[in-house]
Length: 401
Image (cartoon, rainbow, N blue to C red; front, side, top):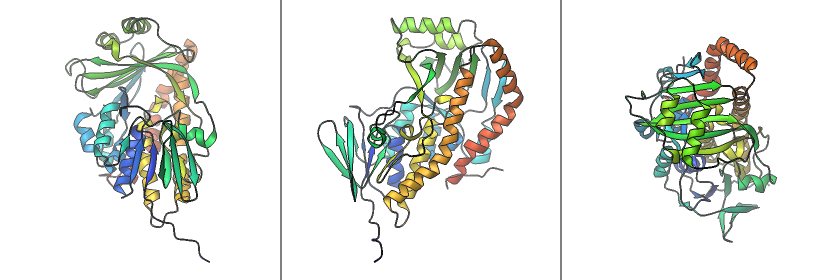
């Protein structure tokens, strides 16, 4: 007797209403697959931080049909500069070249703005105040359970609920993320385009600390100060005192660090331990899988977190939409494909973070000299290993030479 023909996928359950979850709903929508998104928070929002969206991310967003809306508000970058805290150049990435080669720029945008553009394009229901407590898998579907005692039924479950994913816990048990050893303070400064040229990106390296800044909208500069320290700490005192502490940390750093901090609204400052995970060989089982940070959490150090979450969404939707797709087989194929892509990125982001956390001045001197010597090759490998992946989307206007 022949095996039964797989039935159509009628309803996908998505846990998590962040960028990865909303992008998944949109990618499924394009394939004619219905979904519903469940977000734990009482209101749908995705934070006030800034995001660096590489060209591969913009190509994926173009495939979702939203790249033009993003490009209309997100400053495009021509050159990303890297230097020491005193301003001595380490290297630069001429990312503006990617427009000619791939048809999309590298941009910066506020996380909330990107989230809003994706959300506005989605027709699927988005249910807030829905805290996932677990799931039960059946032969032909999945029941998703919530803290209020209710459940929802679907053909499969996608855990896009972040680094502390409840779906991940349901699959593998409690698995705390890894603390990298450093903390990030993020904030927004208000500087006019005359004071801060649009499309600027600069990453500065000091002893055990870093300062990165780029504009995410006209007159809005996102910055991040990174320093080593124990996990779980908090800033004592007022937001104004926190800002004073950051001014002291970066005293004497090259311009315009002090100008940026002086133009910062203290209440915009957010502090967070920087977390990641080691690559995993298993992301799911049966009719359940993971996506985005729930699957492959990586630190900010290569600026690819949001980009690869959108890529995940497109690959997953494509696998599920294949004619006659078996749900479990499609999910395992998605996982294998995306693990090959994200595993080296997780490791690279961790290594770069470790290099940035070096405090010994002799080791810093050696690191900076080595980086200066190999910098051109690092740009070439970034394009080859990260950016060129975006050529797979049919919306790519050109191909790399």
